[in-house]
Length: 333
Image (cartoon, rainbow, N blue to C red; front, side, top):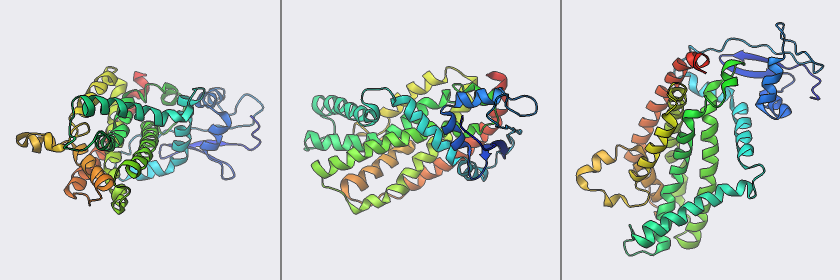
């Protein structure tokens, strides 16, 4: 492998990492290119932890801390594994786009094609929500609601199969399993960011340009990120035991798409069901997103506070659920 130093893989509070002259597990996985090769090296160890080849690599594994379900452990868990998370995210992107004709350009092509389809159907045929504006105005409104939904739908759609698709990480190596659902979320955030760049360019060309209110964006997007992390932990842990969950979530995502003001304005929702409708935390997030990006208005703060509360509840309950369920992963897989 060309590795002269001795790498040590150990477990510290459930986090697998590698230490040797400022190296870490991210460097090790880049050397091996794939996690499968890493696992083969680990499987080749004898009882003493010495690899049975000339690579001079020693592996030591310790029992993962699966009992730490406290919410205070969440930031530390993500921070300690940030390098590994970044490496797995890059590998996920490479596995999706390497060898394809357009490569990373698919991140821009797919949302643009979806935008064209939805604009034609809802804007040109049904003429939804134009209110005297042109088809381009409706396309901007539609796309501004579609961008946050990309992150949510892609993350949740893949979450139930995230652990079941990596059984070797569960059975044969001490590994911070809680970061696996976050990999899909990071990829989804990158895809949503690509669509967001397109939205900004379209707003400059066909809308009113950029507004200073765009600086409210981090406060608005943190809520759906927290919600997605929490739900991804819940769905990935339940997906180990309920294999039909992936198909069920796909149906729920389609249902959620039409229960969120993406293809139509919020004013279309009847007043008698509006309060129940707004229980969907994405409603306030998307409305605020449109306000700061397209209209140059300050966000409605109740629509920031409520999604944030939902996000904190989901991330705490999701982490607790994942840590409690992970003890049985190896038995089921």
